[in-house]
Image (cartoon, rainbow, N blue to C red):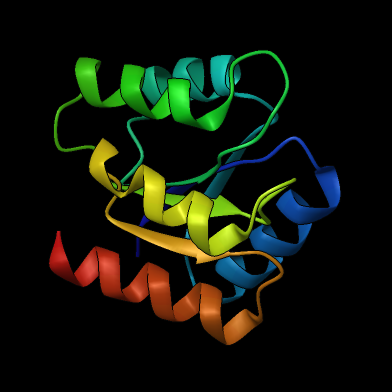
Length: 123
C-alpha cells in the first residue's frame, strides 16, 4: 500500500483520516501545519499528501506551491470545508496548483478511500 501524509490543523480530522487509511492498509504520518508538512515530506517522501488548504502558520496553498516547486510531481489532494467561502469555490480555485484531486469537508469514509484510490491509481 501507500505512505500517506495527512496535513490538517484539526487533530480530530487527522485522527479520523488516519484510522480510515490505516484500516485500508496504508502507512500514515501526520502534520498540523504546512511547515511541518514540508519537513515530514522531505523526511519520509510519502506517495500522497492530503492537504488542508486553510491552516495557521503556513497554509495548505503555500505549502502545496512550495512542495510542488521542491518535488515536482508530488501527489497532493486538496481538502477544504470552505471557511468563509463555499468549499466548491475554494477547491476549484486551487486546481491549477498541481493538485491531483480534491476532497470537500466534511467527508465520508468512502469518499476518502475513493479519492485516495483514484489518485494513487493515476500516479
